[in-house]
Length: 609
Image (cartoon, rainbow, N blue to C red; front, side):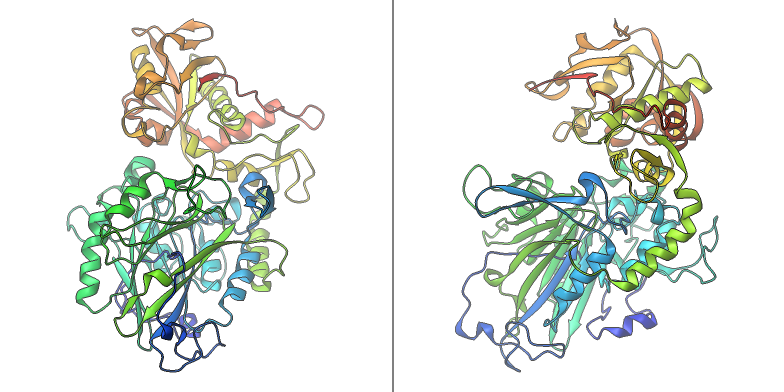
C-alpha cells in the first residue's frame, strides 16, 4: 500500500501514525543504559501523560517508546503446551515457567505499557500470519489482521510465512477485499491491514522493483524515526515454490545499507532495521543477560553476522524467525554498541525499547538506548474487544473445529531432534500413502511443518485426551498434499545426508521418519558424514543404492523445500489429498476413547553426541 494512500478511518485514532515514506518496522532496539549529558532527561511534554524524560517542553532529548513483537503466527487464543510458556531466570539462579500469550492479554499489556509515553510506536517483525491455528488459518488469517488493527500496530516487516499463500494473498491482507475463492466470511467486506507491510529486499523478477515499499517513517512533531524492513533472504528455500514465483530475495545487509543511505539523504537519521532473520541465544531463559561475560552469554547464528555488517547509520536491529528471545549488544562495523532483539514467538513476549532521540542531531543517542523483554502473562484482565473478536471467529469455526478426530493417552510433543509427534505424522502419511499405492516403503516429514504439540489436557470443552480437528489443524496448517515419488536407494541416502549438509550444514533439519526406517546420526562428525551410511536400514535391511523405493512426503518436500533438492527429483509422481486429512484418518483409525493412542517412543534415529 503506497505511503501516500488515504488512511483508513481507524488510523486517525492515533496522532502519531503518519505514513510518510514507505518503510518496514519490527522494533525492539536495545542497548545497555549509560549516562547522557546533564540535559539528557529533558524532553518534549507529551499529551498522554508524563513518562520519564517528558518534563521539559523544549529539551534536547526525547524518549521514544518502541513496543515490538514477532512471529505471532495467528495465535489469537493462548497457545497450549510448551508453545504457551516461557522460562524466567530468578535472582537466585533458579528458573520458573510462566504461562504466556493470547491476544486478549497481549492487548492489555501493550495498552498498559503505552501509558505515560506520548511518543510510542508499536511494530512487528514478520510472520504475523501463516502456520496459524484454525481460528485464523481457516479464514485465511483475516481474524489476525483484524486483531492487529485493534492492537494499534503501526507497521510490520514481512516474514517468510506471509508468502505461504503467495504475493497476491499478501496484497489482499494489506489492501482488503474478500478471498478470491472462499469469498466473504461475514456480512462485512474484509478491510485489510491498517498498518503497512514492508519488505525492502523482495523484488519483482521482471521489473526489479520492490514488491512492497522498503521503508516507513514515523513522525510526531519534530521527531522522526525511519524503519527499514527486510524478509529472510532464504525464503524461497522454506516456502512453496508457487508462493514466491516471480520474486527475487536479495541480501539483507546490502538492502538495509542501501536504504539507510536513502533515508539519511532525506533527512532521517534515526533508523531501526526490522529483519526477519534471527539467532540462537546462549540461554533458554527470556530474561538472561546476553551481555554478561561467561559461558551463558551471547548469541550465535545468522543474525550475529548480519549485525556485524549492517551500516553504523542503523541504530537498532529488531529480529525474528528463530522464535527465540534475546536482548543483546553487538558492535556495529564502526565498533559502536548496537542492540539486537527478538521477542520469542506466538505473542508470549513483547519488547519495550526506549530510543533516546537527540533533537540537535536528529539521531539516536545509542549509549542511552534501553530495552527489555516482558512476559505477556495471563494474570491481567482480558481486553474485551479481543474477547469479542475471538468469540466471533470461534463461533464461525466451531462446527468444523470442535469435531473429535482421535484420542491420546498423553502429550505427544513436537520437541526434540526426533520428536514423537514427527514420528506420528510420518506414520500417518505412510498409512495414507499405502491407500494410494500399497507398495509405498516409507514417509519423510520436514520438522518445520510440525507447528505445535498435541496436548492431553483439554483445550476447550472436549475433555482430556480428545484430539479435535482444530488441534490437528494447529499441528499441520499448511494444506500441503501427500505426494508419492520413486527414488533410487542412492537418492534416498543422499536425501538423508542433505539434512546435515549443503544449506542445512550449519543448522541441520532432521527429517521425521516413518516406522521401519532407522539410522545413526553422529553429531561428533561434520557435514554429510554425520549421517552414518552403513547404519541406514529399512525394516532391518540395508538400503540398496541401485534399488527403487516408493517414498511419501508432503508437497513442500516434494518440491525440494528446506534444502532437500534430491527430494525434488523423484519419478512417477502421484499427488494425494492434504496432509491434515492423512493425520485425521490415522488418528480416527488407530484410537478410541477406550483405547487412546500412546505417544511414539521416538527411537528410530540413534543420536551420537
